[in-house]
Image 1 (spheres, rainbow, N blue to C red):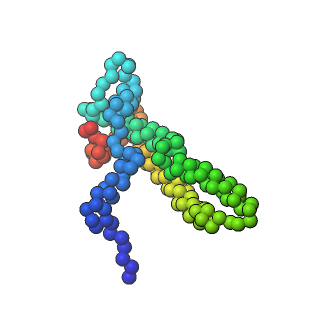
Image 2: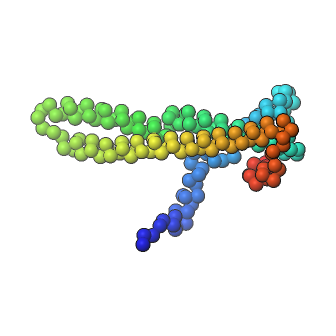
Image 3: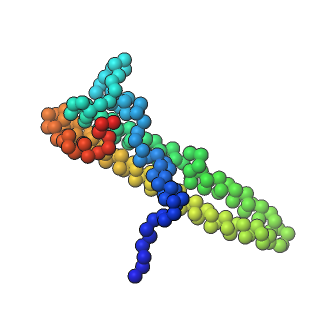
Length: 187
């Protein structure tokens, strides 16, 4: 019988693991000013009469839910579109490394003209190819992660929009009990 992983055991490992979801910030609550702006756009408030978001009435509760969903969706969409240009993204690291490798390969070609291969350079190139493979996997992993968060944000947005539309059409399928089970009510 094979044993399954149980997660980190040491305090240091648990501390690192506890920060995994914070690495990209997509699962965090959206910025309050962004939620406020969306809330007022949804309620069609003029720019000079901005209101603070709250869930005092079912209509405002549905508007708040939609504002939070919009803020999360746009944050995830922006992250997906800009992650390739971020300073420490896997894509940037892979592109930088690819440039270094091109220079190294060009120097290997120049050194090989005298008839003797440079074994140290060949060894470096071999290890660099392995590193490039790891970076390529990291790029794919990051992209899938951002795609997943965008999909989740899109689903929350669709659900909140349906509830907002149903409320405004008099259907009021927006159950207060269903909303209270989520973390965004009362914020």
